[in-house]
Image 1 (tube, rainbow, N blue to C red):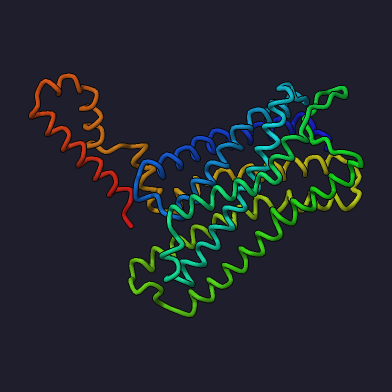
Image 2 (image 1 turned 60 degrees about the vertical axis):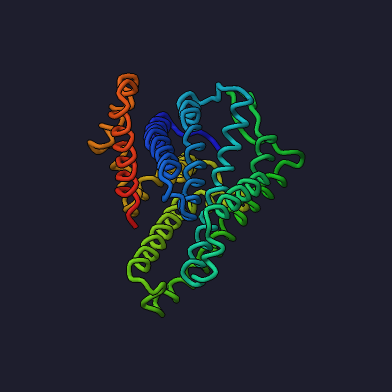
Length: 337
């Protein structure tokens, strides 16, 4: 694909810079919150941790992509070329596999609440996450081997397919379209279709109004995250499959469309904005992280003056108790269900 004009490169670079900063900081913060607060380690949040990890990895490659667009050449060598390309594909597949898993998980929670007690555990969610990364390696590892720098007036980072290259390139694009788009979207659609029928047919799912409200809230959040992912990634999948199967003449419009589709896919890494907006638990924890309560600040101040406190045993015990109470207060603040 040819590169766009100077204006296109500047716009894409500016967009990538915003996504890189917000996405990297936001996703690292999401992972920290899930690790930091014990009661945030639910099955759903373990899957969200996996999404945040994949998004954090891909946003870390955006500075290299930005320089590539601005310079019109890849100056970072063969190793970084392989890493950036493979991370892109790992992110694509791991994200859609995880979102598909989350949809199945929501289906079980809503439609089979008794079975959900045994299946929907943080431990099982971690195992599923590992399996999703292993499955993603089916495309990630071949991409790592195929990616290479090619010099022809400029240095380009691209996939080099074996002969006949057109056949293997087309085959790969079709496989990506089927396994990273068609099949997952079909499974997600079926799961949410069954859930909607279930939610419409019964007023009370769990016997508790509070639990029922939480169940619907989490289901709504997962649905929005899935919908945003599909919106962000559908254009690039459609674009790739059309250009693979139909001979489209090269033009400035085609190049701009290509870059727009790629950039839209990367903006999906801004998921933490959705979590903060849709989920009260994440919202409270984000707020607590950004503006710690006075009790937490007091606890940190006590830890910095530990040498003085150790000389006064009675004050040490009081400080420890205060710190413990502060931690409990923070957990209660962030983890109200």
